[in-house]
Length: 257
Ligand SMILES: [Zn+2]
Ligand SMILES: [Zn+2]
Figure 1 (tube, rainbow, N blue to C red):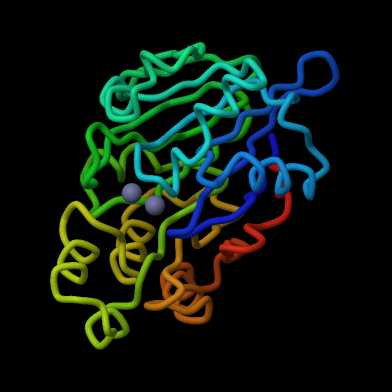
Figure 2 (figure 1 turned 135 degrees about the vertical axis):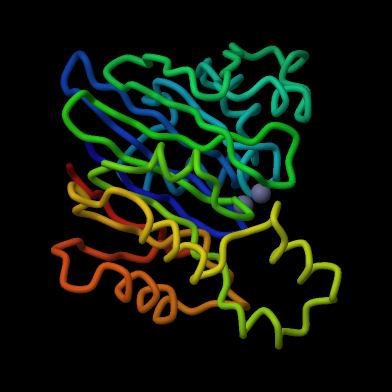
């Protein structure tokens, strides 16, 4: 299994996850949060065509995640996967697409990938986050979550790689020029994870197999790669886990498990 990000942050998110190879290659896009033209440009930058996607999976209906998913799914006849609530929120029922409804905590097989959607608290209709497995390795993804839950800790334990939201630094958000209502939304229990909260999740899970950790969905106003990296390093100590940071413009390069 390998994965790469096409971009991560409040201006758009898309993650490519692959398993198998040759005739059995499975390649899914998790979130499609840019314009169709921009997703295709970013896929091309990674050497991929949209027509090579096995499926598009969606976490929730916010524009930095749903983006052009319906357009691309229709244009290239790509199956779409999302929760019932997300489908309702974006009108996927009436969009002339191959819609597959996911239920929280029920694993589905998409080609060579086992895909576990799991429930999280966020201010969307029925948001899901995902754990991917090819039978040998597990990749856990968690962004757009207001606070940890016992369930999140259970699901993310034992992963080989994690893409973990480090949205904001608490001090930077508190002193930013954002209006009070926006600060409350971002920092609230259905908003986004700050660096300390992300570190708390990391500290609480089984990290015995964790080899790669990527800090993701960083705010460009209220965080820095250095602060996010330091928060992760503080928890990991001397563990042999590689820490990376996903950027809005570039995402991150392929990581193989
Ligand atoms: Zn988001
Ligand atoms: Zn969101």
